[in-house]
Structures are given as C-alpha cells and as structure tokens.
Length: 278
Ligand SMILES: [Zn+2]
Ligand SMILES: [Zn+2]
Image (cartoon, rainbow, N blue to C red; front, side, top):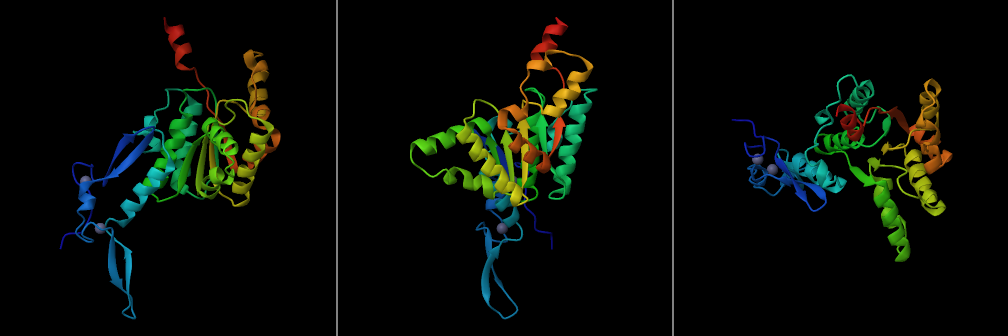
C-alpha cells in the first residue's frame, strides 16, 4: 500500500497556495487536500477507542495541514509579504554583519521555538526587520501549528481609538493579542502615542510577560544604550535621534528587554545608496 500523503504539482506538494485577499495574505487549501481519500475531504474521521466508543477526530492525513493553513490566515500577514513563507527568504546584503546576525537569530528562534527568547529588531526602514518577523510567524503557523498574530503598531492605536470612540471595551481589541502564543508588533513607537495609549500598551506587554508568551518587535528607533554605543565613535546626527525609551517610555522598554533579544540592524537605506552611486 502506498503511503497516504497530500500535495500535488499545483501546490508544490504543500497542500496550499498563497494568494492576496484585500490587504492580507491568504493561504488557500489546494484541491488535492479537499479530495483527501482518507476523510473524503471532510477533514475529520470517525475513530473507535479501546472501549469501542466511536468519536470524531481530525484526519491524520490532511488535518494538520488544514489547521495550520487556518492559523496562517488568522495571523493577519499583510498582502505585500505573501511570498515570505520562511525566514530564509531574507537575503542579507554582502558584508552586512548585523543583517546576517539578525537572520541567523530568527532562524534559530524558529528552530528552537519555544526555547529561545524572542527578538526586537531595531534600525532604519528598509533593512529587513519586518521581513524576518513575518518569515518567523509564517513558519511557526504553517510548519509548527503555532498561533501567531501580526499587528502594525500604528494600526493597533487606531483600532484602540476607534473602539474607545464607539464605546467598545478595549479588551475586544486586546484579547486576541494577549492570548496568542506569538505576537509581532511591527513598527513599535511609530506615530504620536498619548498617555492613554501607552498605558494600554503597557497592559498588553505586561500580560504577555506574566504569561511568559513570546513577543517579537520591529522598530525604527534604537534603544538608549545602542545610541550611546554608536555615538561614542563619531558624534554624528545620532544626537537628535529619538530613542525607543523616548517613544514608549522606559517601563515598557525595560520589560521588552527582558522578553526580547535587542538586535540592531544597520546599513544604508536604498535612497542613500542610490545617491552615492550616481
Ligand atoms: Zn495540491
Ligand atoms: Zn483527510
């Protein structure tokens, strides 16, 4: 008897295809899974336990694939990252050691999940911070069946504001972010945050911290100590650059330090490289 597996040439044996659906990236179950012979495409089978009780269980052939695809779709991966299904899709620039280190940390994080600290990538836009974070949660959902949520910080603040103006309890916005196993907060510190917003962010981070849940962060702001380190060699424009501590407060920043490995990513953004070469 041949081993029952899923996958066909259309889905490159993955059992799903990735599409864009509005603003989000969406994994669609392939027809080969929907035709699974083990469960006649229903996703579940009737099984008998040792006392001959009959119960419904997930199909052993396609059940995991279906569940993981659902998890990916619940994670809220933005459509522009629909091709980023693995950390390894990130290509560090030659000789950029900080990008190479960030890549190796993210790969190791996924491999050892949940036994390695989360990460906080800090640095200018366009250096791959979000790419790496998305790669990590794509792998965690699709390959390991871990519940993950991606949240843009600025977007989170507007959702909170909207909930407040409509009289909806803020917990409706926060609960999925508190409960998920892995949370990505993208572009932490972006935009102006009020005392009230930072207070809510503090609650979110504290609850995840107390529950020992992993949080991954990207931010365009560097931490205080990193700024000092960089500033000591050459007194450049670093002086007036705001720090993460300025943006979110030292209480949140120090809690994040306990939860995440702070990893600076350096390099020139596209515009500056371009100007130099012409
Ligand atoms: Zn297929
Ligand atoms: Zn099946």
